Image 1: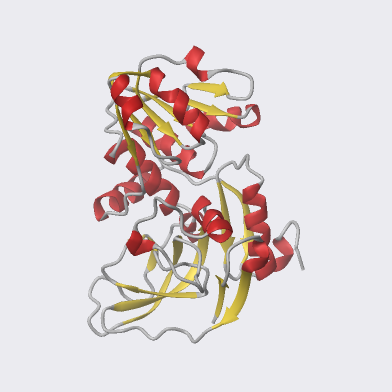
Image 2 (image 1 turned 135 degrees about the horizontal axis):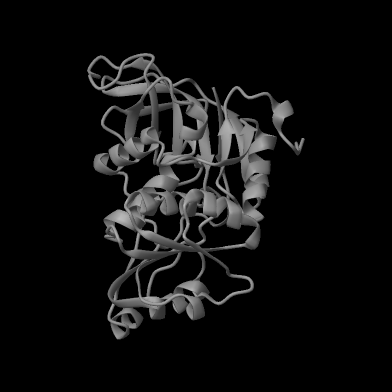
Length: 324
């Protein structure tokens, strides 16, 4: 089978295509033929810089390393002791050891969920990481309740678009920041107020929100404490909050990683099946080395709207720009 790995950190040229034997499942394992995988910020950060400081020690990879986290696919083989899945099941999941491969082998008790066969596996390949990160920020750590008000910085990206939809499904009022070009898209997602961060200062327009979710940079994080009402919460996915600043404003501020618990995964799938959570795909790419490099380059340009998804068995001719 084909895999794409990194043997060093740096530009897209560190991505390498290699061949490997198709895994043979152990008694508790399932073998999955991959259908689609999402392109996410951690993939680009890991490729460029290696493990980041906030990454738990047990998750820090060693070289050579395979990038990728969320995926969808179809189970091709199961181990003798597997009871939770059957051959032919459609699944989506989170794989901490990487997803840039034609086949993945996972323990049946890992972060893997069976999905109805009628659901399109392509958007599901880009759902879990963004949605579970948003769920962690909004629900697990944000404690958002119906009738409350949330400010989401960076609403147009993969995580931001999920956070908006989850907050609206919970009955909250949603304010978000984004470039002007994304405002119609965000309105369609349900955002109640959209601020163009390039021409407007959110500090002057937003006051006394119950929750701020920071998906952008340090400067935005530093300015966000003052717009949260006393007793409110600030959750950052990008940058660790300053506890002294938070205490001075009488709020709680935490850094959040994705919630891959079974409860969170079940809730996300339920919202998706109800149509309350959708995946906007900005572009798909075939699983070729040139296409994966291009996906990374496109992601790094910024201004992403929704998700970029790598689709297996897709013809290379569908790629807008091939690097080969």
